[in-house]
Length: 144
View 1 (cartoon, rainbow, N blue to C red):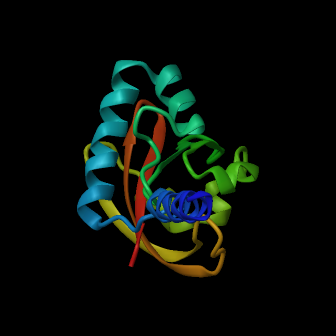
View 2: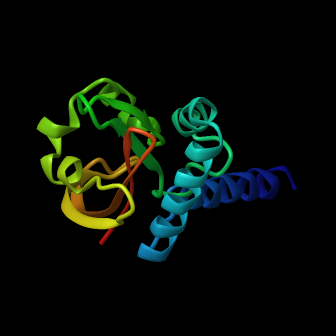
């Protein structure tokens, strides 16, 4: 009986790990961007903190928001737990397409190579929806 329970526990763990990095869609990314914009308009400081912690639905599989200052390009929030070392980096240098796409009242789409979250760190083609709100450029991407 113990071996069956052990195998069942490993199987459940494998399913949870897979679900944690399930691949999102363009619709998922757009919906999370809308949620991000609403949260920033409601309480900018709280929203950025929740994004950085991946809380309150700001990390779902491989869908997560990122935000940067429009004035200096500094990345101030990212929901990807594997990319926290990028906080403070100038996105206008690391991803100039995303920086240029941040326009108030518009949602623009950019495509670029990005490392996948989770175990597979290989780069993949990623598209991000980008907008500007409250002095920030924010985006949410999905892997194609």
